[in-house]
Length: 151
Image (cartoon, rainbow, N blue to C red):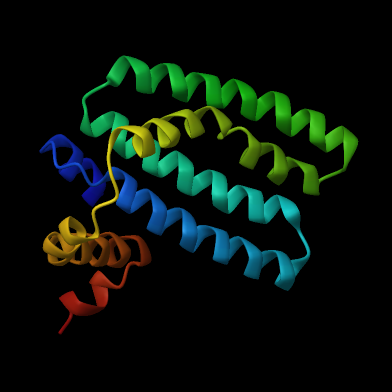
C-alpha cells in the first residue's frame, strides 16, 4: 500500500489520504445503503477503510506492538459485536458487528488528522507513485495480471 511506504519515508501525507479515502468510502457506503438497504454493509465499508488506513500508518511507522494490540482488540470486538448483533438483529447483524469492531482504529485516524496538515500539493507530487501502486494492487487482487501475462 502506498500509504505505508510514504509514512515509512516520513512524508506527512496521512491526513490528505485519509480525507480522500474516507470521503470516497462515505459516498460508497451511501450508494450501498440505498442499493441494498443494509446498514451493516455500509458500516463495514467505512470500517474496512478505517482499518486499512490505520494499519498502513502503524506498519509504516514500524509500531508493530501497537498494531498487534489494535489487531487483537479488533478481533475480540469482532466476536463480541457479531454475536451480540446476531442475537439482536439476526444474520444481518453480523456484518454490522464486523464493521463496528473497527472502532478502535478511529483513534489512529484522529491522531493522523491532528498531527499532519492537509497538503494537496504534496499529494500531487506523489500522485504518480500512488496511482501506480494502486493499479498494481488492484490488478493483483482481481487477477487481471494473468491476462496480461498471456499477451
